[in-house]
Image 1: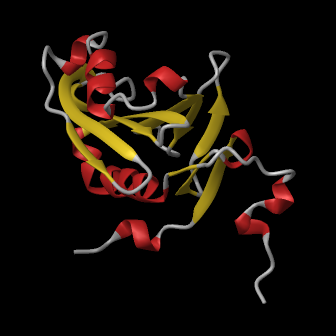
Image 2: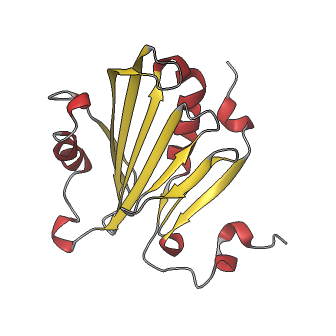
Length: 175
């Protein structure tokens, strides 16, 4: 099986001076919304990724990511009444995600098609990130490796902000 994610050229998104960052395919476009989140789209506009983040209030720092995601999804009719939520954690981060399908109309063709919504909530107790990803079922073979690469490179900071873009690890000269 060809691993497309390992072959793609990438750019990096850095939010709030390094408190959230991830890699994404170089040919995708990034736009900022008036509401405060960013949207990334592939060149064919077959999939869309939206990212927002917030600082976690002290009283919510230990709330389980899957519980928060379940609460968010109650407002999303396409997700159904009780979507299956998976979760994982490591030493510093907690993640919960779901993937659901729903019928939709492909605006490019006008045809009915199966669409997917994939939601990810991540937290490290200081910052919380919400990543939503929408794609057509027919595009899963290339869209999901992009999603997986974004997820595997997602980092949440420790609160120490970069002084300037030149301070970011990706801009440092290697000796």
